Image (cartoon, rainbow, N blue to C red; front, top):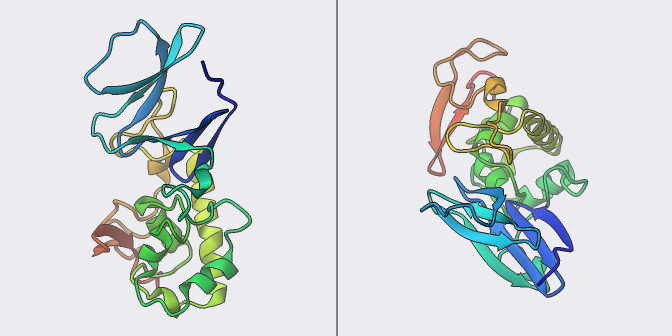
Length: 225
């Protein structure tokens, strides 16, 4: 008998706020939420139902089981799940000054740096590759060897790539669909990701692939330095 007072997102967590605390849901790689009737049959990949007074329910489905449902209590942002997270990439707090200051003395690859959720949330493998290409920065370049001006460009590129991806409904390569079951169409706009051997749209040099931080990275060796 609890009332949902608010729903918000922090990084990849959906936060359902009740008077008694907050429930967090992370969809993982293949998770989804669907509104069904309370009488809907349970599939083997259905794990959690939130029941409503009107006879409907919110069902969490996760075939690959990388998702998470966890109770965070009344101070969710200070919980161990959320307290360590960096700023949201589309917020005003995320800018070139911030990236430059956090990158100081770091020798690791800039791609790993911007994919670190403690630095900034929401920049996954696809969007990191795309943003670095738009900013003309090589993904293996040391994070501490990039100028303030280039971090300004990278910040603009990250925000732009994410905004365009949101407008396109996301990127569906395997599992992802929207809440309405519709796949995302940003794949059609990808400049480098998954395009090994194809010509760069800026200079026509072949797109290359390299494993950085155990993830495939796609880039143009001519445009990105």
